Amino acid sequence: MSGICDGRVVVVTGAGRGLGRAHALAFAAEGARVVVNDLGVRLDGRHPDARADRDRTSAGADRDRTSAEEGLMRQGGPAAQVAAEIRAAGGEAVAHAGDIATTAGAASLVSTALETYGRLDTLVNNAGFLRDRMLVNLDEDDWDAVLRVHLKGHFLPLRHAAAHWRAESRAGRTPAARVVNTSSGAGLLGSLGQANYSAAKAGIVGLTLVAAAELARYGVQVNAIAPAARTRMTEHTFAETMAAPATAAGFDAMSPANVSPLVVWLGSAAAAGVTGRVFEAEAGRITVMEGWHPGPTADKGARWSPAEAGETVRRLLTEARAPGRVYGTG
Ligand SMILES: NC(=O)c1ccc[n+]([C@@H]2O[C@H](COP(=O)([O-])OP(=O)(O)OC[C@H]3O[C@@H](n4cnc5c(N)ncnc54)[C@H](O)[C@@H]3O)[C@@H](O)[C@H]2O)c1
Image (cartoon, rainbow, N blue to C red; front, top):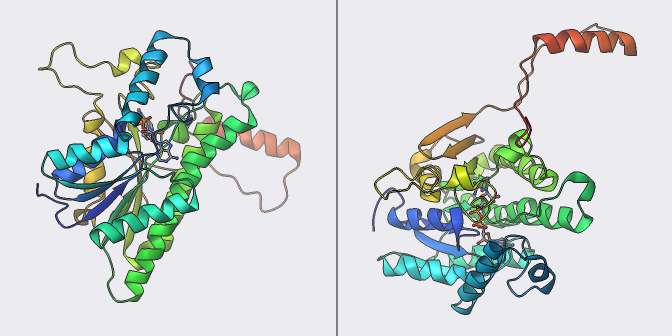
């Protein structure tokens, strides 16, 4: 296997299934040696054997999914499966089954790349799970678990990889290092029933901007994607939108593999000069997302009274662009 990632070593978190798996396969197909991370948890982040979660799954589809996931765990877990798949296709890969939202897991992820392949070039932060509830029903545990896996699960691998790249740079070996983070439309626009997830994914955009600015001097570029694809996260909730085409001949628009080419390019040396950006990627479309920009403004040059502030805000709002609609509304 050879291509635009020849000689590079790439770590992909949550690569045992869904988007992460597609990214890992696509990087390997472009010549990268891949560290395939996945803890092998269920869609709500619990271990496949977790009792509390199993008791809640009554629907047939959930039961089928549960036994499929238990099957995967018996075969060494999803990370081992994907690493084996890459090797069977002639690529190089090693599995890592740690929790990326812990210091030990993130540190061992980076050291697995360094000890196995002697280098680290690209980190794709992708792992995560959902605990959707309307805000008034959202438990503290569901808030903490989702913030932890997405936000801390991005920060910790990034922080450990960045320490390695800073050392490389200081030793005179400035890397062409790349980080691709995974946000979501929910983080950019908000999504009903996903206050925890939307907050975490918005936080990932902030983390991306700061990391891009701080790490540029060490040769590290950091971007984020907001993907949409058919995975276990979406295939039931958005069944119609995510469905595969009826015939194999049609373009399978929502295949996760359609998101991976952008991720592979952003993770390659070819992406030189592109950093601190957010891209939406879905089907055959790539969109540069433009962030917060100052809109209509008024400056009195002195303190407003509340009534004046209100009048001014109403006038400015008539001149401002309407915000994008929160997913799930209207
Ligand atoms: N599918 C979509 O349309 C969509 C849309 C927007 C954002 N995303 C984001 O894309 C990423 C991938 O999601 P997906 O749809 O492929 O879901 P998925 O459930 O198929 O894959 C996520 C993987 O992450 C792993 N994981 C969870 N917690 C982990 C941890 N602590 N350590 C290591 N691995 C862990 C899971 O075991 C799972 O294999 C997520 O960050 C998700 O929020 C997906």
